[in-house]
Amino acid sequence: KAGVTQTPRYLIKTRGQQVTLSCSPISGHRSVSWYQQTPGQGLQFLFEYFSETQRNKGNFPGRFSGRQFSNSRSEMNVSTLELGDSALYLCASSPLTYEQYFGPGTRLTVT
Amino acid sequence: ELKVEQNPLFLSMQEGKNYTIYCNYSTTSDRLYWYRQDPGKSLESLFVLLSNGAVKQEGRLMASLDTKARLSTLHITAAVHDLSATYFCAGDMDSNYQLIWGAGTKLIIKP
Image 1 (spheres, helix red, strand yellow):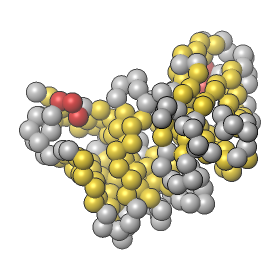
Image 2 (cartoon, chains in turn cyan, orange):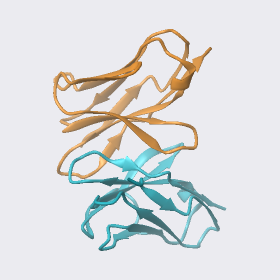
Image 3 (cartoon, rainbow over the protein chains, first blue to last red):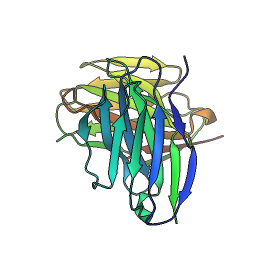
Image 4 (cartoon, one colour):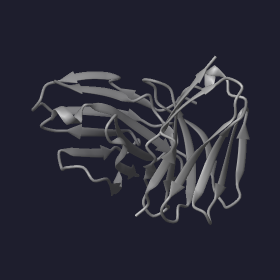
């Protein structure tokens, strides 16, 4: 089975721009979660989607948004980028059980 | 609110030695996870511990869970250089659909 894929893998953006990251879960997995990883704040939960519904959202400003499509693929969007948004963004998919499988991540650099 | 604390945050050890990483959590967690992360890479699932007294072993790594003490440990036996990585513990609750992470333990194993 193919693993979780994330695109793009690397991205450089300028402050004020917006960015969209994509995540394709493992086939059959209906839950997709997003996490931000930075050296200062560590791993922080962004949001979780199941069957196109957001079930939980972390403590991030409204500039961070996401969605899930009917095929379980998910996107997250960050608008009005700030330098502090530079991070590794990790997507994880999960079957109906609890275990989460992580993708390779998208490394976003904001200049 | 679930909080997860790991210690130590940094550990440098010699090959062949044994050591333990500790993970304390603040309130009831339905599950306790251990992940490994190599530099610049994603998260690899090591163990999922579901109940009090659970013990799981894979090679030189053994994880255990004491729900009464709210403590999980990751024990490394006869360390080898290939185990150098950052190790994270995380907890979750069924109602929240998110992982709450410890800060990570950076493990360096010297020949």
